[in-house]
Image 1: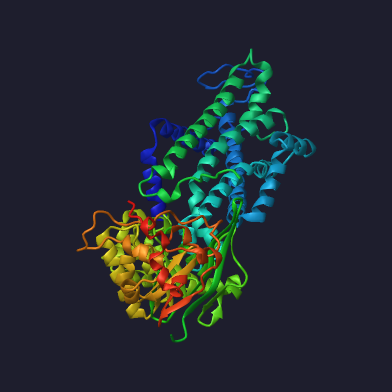
Image 2 (image 1 turned 60 degrees about the vertical axis):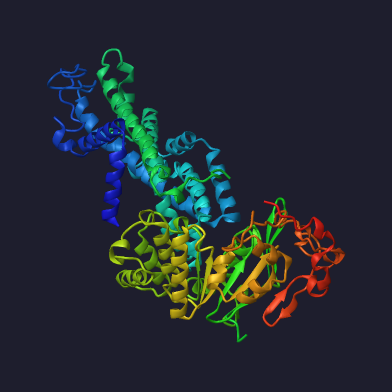
Amino acid sequence: MSADGVDRARRAWARLSPGARAAAGVIAVFALASLLAPWLAPYRVGQQIDIVHLASLPPSWAHPFGTDRYSRDVFTRILYGGRVSLSIATLAVVVSATVGTLYGAVAGYAGGAVDTVMMRVIDALLSVPRVLMLIAVLALWSPVPVAALVLLIGLTGWFDIARLVRAQALALREREFVVAARALGAGPARIVRRHVLPNVLGPVIVAGALAVGNVIVLEAGLSFLGIGVHEPLASWGMMFQDATDQFVSAWWAVIFPGAAIVATVLAFNTLGDALRDVLDPRQLPGHAALEPPETAHG
Amino acid sequence: MAEPLLAIEDLRTYFYTAAGVARAVDGLSLAVAPGETVGVVGESGCGKSVSALSILRLVSPPGRIEPGSRILFEGRDLLALDERAMRAIRGRRIAMVFQEPMTALNPVFTVGDQVAEVARIHARASRAVAWKQAVAMLDRVGIPAPDERAREYPHQLSGGMRQRVMIAMALMMKPALLIADEPTTALDVTIQAQILELLAELQREYGMSVLLITHDLGVVAETASRVVVMYGGEAVEQAPVAALFAAPHHPYTRGLLAAMPRLGLLRERLQTIPGTVPAPTAWPDGCRFRDRCSSAWERCAAEHPPVYPIAPGHESRCHLAHEPARRDGPAAAGGRAVRA
């Protein structure tokens, strides 16, 4: 099973466009750089090197991305900020994908009244804008622990994935192989585990990749509003917010974190779109059974 | 007949749709003896497949099996069982083979895994034991190099091989009854013969009963010992195979036989039965076949024909049994038209 997964991943990689491979490369570089921040960073995190003489320096060999108004090295902060931004985004999406997939699979496979009620709950939750919901909670809960922030973002972001999975599950339920599995005595739990979940994995991975980009922007936005992560932690959004008022005098403190956000989001979106094409089962020979549902929205 | 293995009594499966109540199966009765092969034939839309799904209670909403229907299997009424007990029967005592083995297999698992799964469900076998049994079963259904084939995915196998895999899954637990719903329709003719032969062979070996659902009378002639002809959601004629082919009684059966291509019989064109099966939301009153029947007279509109005995083991739902003189009917001149 796992050797097979590797094989499938390899085949998928072979089908990716050069742009998508570049995007995957960008993500890999950012992830690695963040991971290795303690070894790569030229200075200690949060270190104010010399606030009198070395504040707001333009990029130079000593400070490739310059220093901010507190004389902190922007390059160092971007490396450490990447840890925060990327891990919050990834973990939040893992939370969203897990909750959304299970919720959607249960609703879609159960069908009928259960499905109707579960979907109306989502409609109700979706009627409150996500940002508003987060602002309301975060404004009252300050400073918020990072784990709670991850959970809050994750738990407000699973609705779309749930809908997607539900639509797939609804269609899968009518597929002949599911009927065949039932005819052989498989119960509902087994069918969801064996027949529904593996067959929705592709779309969920795609949706997840796209969602990571969204969450990075969301987290940046919250931090920009001052209600996301708090000092001494730094996220890209926070750095951006910190420095905007000196944009004219010290543009590097704004541009570099901004560029990191834009590059990462672009990379995730490009990769997500490419994965959608690659994982689209209609393009795999002999996978007719996985065609997407005609009745996607109910 | 000895105590039947399966006895369907007045099965009615209705679908409650926006267009009205579709009475897909409406008063079907039939029995299958232990070890016997019964062929169920009829056109598309006559209720064959819904009947098969009803036996396993796999009809999903808006379909419903109406109260008053009975499906007796090994002495128990399946319709009275709870879902748990029913699950223990599916795949273990009654198994089913589907028409299209490509779509009936899950594309993301190897075929060995899918065959083994049946043993894991019913025998709670360990992964290793189930796998070994699956490979043995694949070998038994005539898959060459089963060890390697078991590790392949459905799309890597040919249609005939996939159908063998389906049969392996169905027979894993040695069921008492195998329902085969158009098992060869999706296959090449040469492969068809092989699959039918395999089914017959396994049936003898396991002593199981087979309910073979098909629109192909040729398939029935080759494999079944008894035939049930379905029309309009009910059985219109039942007979031993030889009797049905030699002396069909119901005009619908005669129409089906006349529409069959046969070697040695020179005909310009094959005959067809005029018209199409009426929508199951609107069976005609009286005899459901009367609109397409050249012998139909007033009685056919007024009275739903009961089951008339024709000969031992041969019965027909046609008033002609009572008034045989009307066979050639008033409409004989134009009714039994040869239309292509």
